[in-house]
Length: 302
Image (cartoon, rainbow, N blue to C red; front, side, top):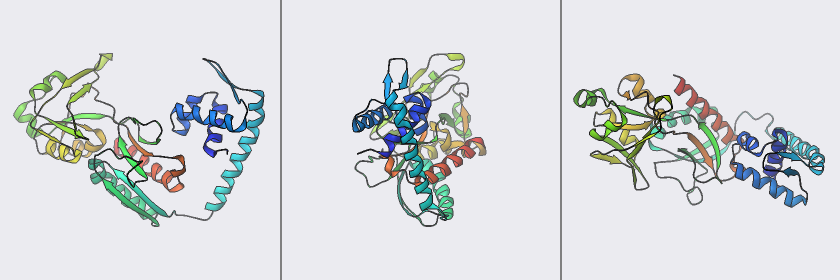
């Protein structure tokens, strides 16, 4: 049986002349894109692409089939649009897992505004920093920080260029001074975050002018498995934290926290919405993705 997502991968790969470019546009991994093309070729019993180590081009059979694939996708799109015609809202239940800090303090407000636009959507939220197992937990979507370890998940980027920043409260800095280098953090009380029982106590910094990254083993008298708690400790002047910029941007603008070592880039912390299958990427999910991505962009732009 032919799969719609495989047809889409085939058409986008043919248009771009590249599996990796098609994967980027569709927001899937290159491995998933390649598997989709191979699955389609197997279902058809045809070789659609001629591959070498440096190039990818359509075969004669692929050129002929491309016309039919495009037409099939066009008809399906028209049918979908016809079903949605005249609807100004979406309905259904979205079960979403959120990280604790940005979830409680930022995304909850955004979801209130989203639900006002689409009042027939019912939200069921799970808030916490334990990595959600989408295959076992009763959630449809998870919003996560960091790079995805499971390439089979469907990733919908919200803030792909977000990074961690080093922060402390003015009260702490008055008592203990400013670290001049990443290595100086060893002399400070660092507020560490634990996830799934593992304490994140090795902080990595990328120096100015292309200097090699530095990894510093930090210590302190506090750690927590809740990122919101770590941020609250930092605001209270208990130590230095390495936090997502999205989490602390309001504290930085208000002066509750100060950014430290601005010439050093901390670890990347992309914010992504993930789900298990392309079939879960419904119009409501896409609207939520676009809404949250716009809110993240506005927050970071100030």
